[in-house]
Image 1 (cartoon, rainbow, N blue to C red):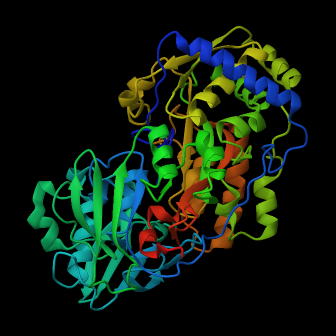
Image 2 (cartoon, rainbow, N blue to C red; image 1 turned 180 degrees about the vertical axis):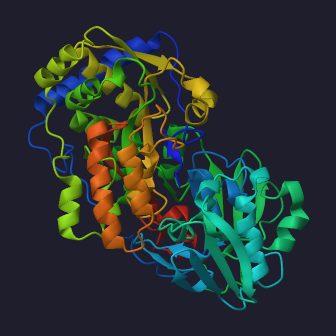
Image 3 (cartoon, one colour; image 1 turned 30 degrees about the vertical axis):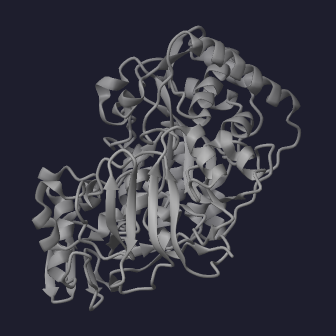
Amino acid sequence: MTTSPTSSPTASSARRAARRGRRRHRRSAAALAVLAALAACAGPPRNGSGTPFDLSAATPRPKGDIDSFTWALYAEPPTLDYTVAFDYPQNMVLSNVCESLLRWTPELTTAPGLARRTTHPDPTTWVYDLRAGVRFHSGGTMGADDVVYSLERQRDPDNAAAWAQVFQNVTSVRRTGPLQVTVRLKKPDSQFPQYMASAAGVVASKAGVEAAGKDYGTSGGLACTGPFELGTWHKGQSIELDRFDGYWGRRAKSGKVVFRFLPDASARTNALLSGEADGGYLIPTESYDRLRGSGVGKLYFGEGLSTVNVAVTNLRGALGDLRVRRALSLALDRSGFVQVGLGGAGTPTGSPTTRATWAGAPERTRKRAFAGLRPGRPDIARAKALVKKAGATGRTLTVATSSIGQDVSLLATAVQDAGTRIGLDIRLKSIAPNAFTALFTDPGARKGIDMFPLTYYGSITDPLDVLTNFRSGAYLNFAGHRDPAYDRLVDRATALDDPRERLAVEARLQRRAARQLPWIPVAEWPTAVFLNDRITGAPTSISYMYHPWAADVGAAR
């Protein structure tokens, strides 16, 4: 399964980008000057970026309950139907209302959710024993029929579910008891059970969804089981969640959560500083310093499972020669980009996966996976020589860019700078915000574009979540990269239930992907969350995508 790509969390969609007009060239020149200055005076890096930042395991525990809190959200969800919850805004809200068979914890491990127990009697069978007495917001009690119905909605081709690929190996989902569901697969699939902790494994009331019909997810309730239920949705302004007093688990500390839609990065930051919003995830990188020194709250960083990359979209031109891709990778000033583009909160990397996804691997496997992937300073001479050997000196390459956030615009500028230094002609192309999403779904939209900035977050804590994207025909294999040996390794890793054996194969996949560069890895990017002095308890990790994080938020004093 591939997870949602995102070009910038400061966009009205996390997959959109734009930059317009002749101003592009003046802004690019200014940004190039900044990057050049950083490269000249950076000195020994701390965390590889030149700026220190610490990862917090958690925020302080609340001291009591609160009536409500307000959360800044950079975009309004188009729908809250769990089958299409494939981006930050939808999942950040939905994770508090709808629950899955399993649960992703703040520590990024998997725990029981609506299924109290999971068994695996043979390589192609998964059995889920459900909790008894779980109530739906819409009325009624959860049973096996609701689980079967919910998972079958993901499999139904008429629904165009975003999570359909998770179910590609599923042959049947059956009720095998009043509180038991059995899933049978065509072949062993180590990833399927892990995705049952994501929106792919959400359970909603069959009666509630059918009663809503085509309006499900856009009005009325969601017929789910979480600690909050959907309250009033003020279109274009906010979504309110109300505490569900019939919740089977631990009672939420806040009686209400109000998500305010603030697409403008400056307005969002000002709302956090003024107290108009009590907190928020996906903080604009350009606001880190203001929030750190505000005195009205605290900015935390946690594990994000997110990598910033340059996605290669065209192998028919100069980038079809691996030497050119390697040259660009060698010439990129990753530390300069991290310090400016990510506000200093990030780690330069040559790895397509984050270190956190390898937490379950033996130390020997981790060392093999990352051997030789720590990037050094830009090696312009070596990169220029590779371009010359490839006969690509003077060749033109086009990079899509965006003014949505400095993480995107400055990465495009960094690529332009690197290419210019090694003899390539790198041009930036502006794309309107409402058109940028098409780069991920429409090959026609990528015509004339060779690269674009791409931030990728993991939905499970397994390196294969990223690495499967580079197999032949994969959804995010934008340039059509093909390597039969790589495909065989993906199939082998997918079939291995034993995590140690699987991770050993994935280490081989990682090294192979890093050599072939279907994407050019740039940096690891942590999760950022700001909480004002009134509230605390929100997790610092990216678990907020599928964990009911708002239930843990309470009074700081």
